[in-house]
Length: 377
Image (cartoon, rainbow, N blue to C red; front, side):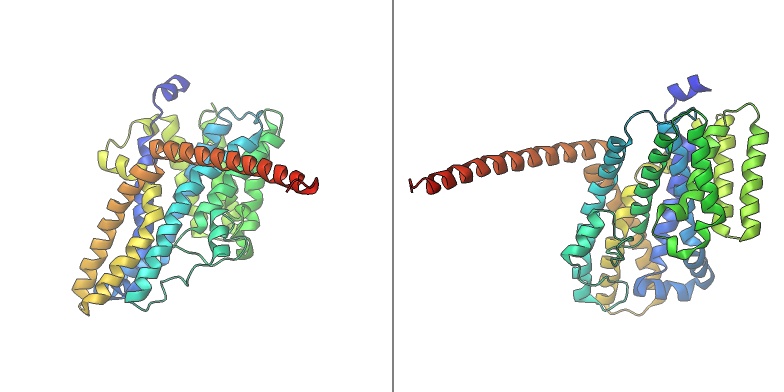
């Protein structure tokens, strides 16, 4: 199995799950915000209600996949993390925050434009500098800052989850202690923290789903797969008996799917779909940019002056298509691996120039002060 994994780094099943989940989240927001959503709901009331009520649960797919891939990258054999976790956490922050900040800036501009053309509760209030900085630091949820775009709480939570996972694996310095520590924190989340809404801005609230993903990565290679799978399932069902949460049931289903598909190698060879593979790769870009697109398409609909429900449905389809197109462009020019490297290099160069200028300016100021003190000026 390890030989197969070394040869096949792609995981089509994960790409497919990300593709489907990201599109459900986009549709959830399209049916939740703006006059287009209200018009489309009149034509397809049951479908719209389904997306509004349950569409947000698609985030569980990303939480479980996040834990699965974090275990794969940080502790593939259940070993502890020997290296300093801070550089890993810093790289994760840059990977998430740079495209996020750019997308948030675009959302601020789109909100200002949409505010000129329509009056709707979906438009965020005018952004402040402190609000933008809270988002840039991925602290907007913790600090209680009003969101500048839809669903952006997830970016901050994703960063917190990865950082917590890395720290737990680093704290557990022995082979078995590290995964046991991760699983113990996941259990505390399943039985306690995930039941308390006041924790929803912190990683512990979501670490149950994240930990399920990590657990199935570690156990899917074990000889006693049925035993470990049964244990994971039993513990999760016990948590559901204590307090039933459909989102946790979905997380368990996704985790089991990943675990069995890895063991059977299905993870690396199915489905063979170019469309799902592509939509999976651009899913983060689509997620980041779809809300500004949603606002602008809604504003354009209001400007037409039409009250036709069929036009509203057509507008939703346009917004959905435009979100994918904009996400494609965002992935290519901002969020994708190559674009991300270029942006990082540009930021490093800019930072070095600022430091050099600051240092040179500081020396000039010190020389001027010395001349002034000794009376040469």
